Image 1: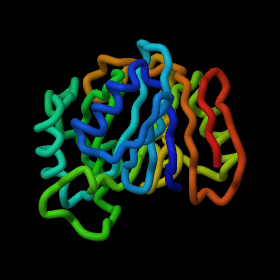
Image 2: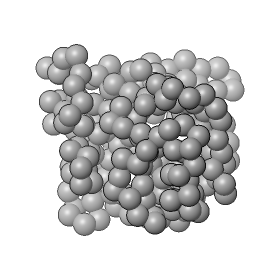
Image 3: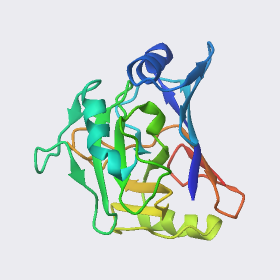
Length: 226
């Protein structure tokens, strides 16, 4: 499964454009009403909306061989968030994910992440990391009241199965090419557990799922489109 497009609301569109284009150096096209950020094979669509205490979470895929260079590149541009458990800003993924991550805050309080999955192979590892080496949107988090029910419905609608780890508060569906991360509403978010998940206006377009359709998990403001 691939995440082809994610649309979410930001309270200050000009600030968001400046963050992705000027600070991170990503390709951005915009007009007065919206902006599109290109992240490898994915796009992030930004549209205006009210500020909210709940935080979006997105992860961006980078080559595993270049993770250290990616962390250094990112640290020159933004403060890195530290784990509430270890105090470190480089974090090993959950059991079975075989990944490493570093987190940072987006322009509207989003919890953003660079993730390197060791089993995913890219065309070539860059000698010098840059924004053009971000391969895709790897994860998008969705807050729901009932995680197991949402996972079951995503399997029924799109044939997506759990990638794990599974609990009443957390699960993920898809594969290493793209994951929908289901978290219980109000759950403290990694890595520093300062922000909390909540229902947010969000649209996610999936590719390579083999089944077309549209699904809105109950008690959310999210639309998933296959």
